[in-house]
Image (cartoon, rainbow, N blue to C red; front, side):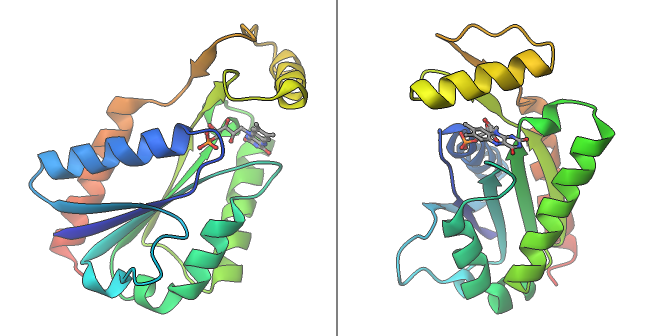
Length: 181
Ligand SMILES: Cc1cc2nc3c(=O)[nH]c(=O)nc-3n(C[C@H](O)[C@H](O)[C@H](O)COP(=O)(O)O)c2cc1C
């Protein structure tokens, strides 16, 4: 298949996740176009057989660029198999209230975009202390402390389960090939 991957990132973890998806799919024989939202003006979702969109949660929302991209291409996205990867730190934990919040954030996003993906996955992100300014670093240390996590404020801490991500993407691609929409 020809697969489009569009991602939005603030500190870089979703770019890393999108690249891992691209490498996995290319390894499985697919061709992949990897673009950071909003992408080229001429970017055609319609040129691809399937699409993955990936964005991360900051203060309870995904990046505005991804909201604009999904809304602008809702019709073409709805016409093919899609996977939405929602990256956050709450996804790394087991708090039921936080997971309910992640579901609500995703459903609000799809309602506003006017598009419902074929599959959605909540993916654990990372603390990226090397990318934070003073205020973000302070806020994220506070959040870590609230969760009882001890973090090194000079190092990154990754929670992404790479093996599970690769398995998910291959499973989605196999289903997309079997049911091209
Ligand atoms: C300022 C800020 C706000 C964040 N807000 C949330 C949040 O509301 N919920 C959550 O689960 N994670 C939150 N996170 C964690 C990010 O989703 C996580 O670090 C993710 O890996 C970021 O992906 P990115 O590097 O692709 O931007 C926040 C992180 C930062 C720096």
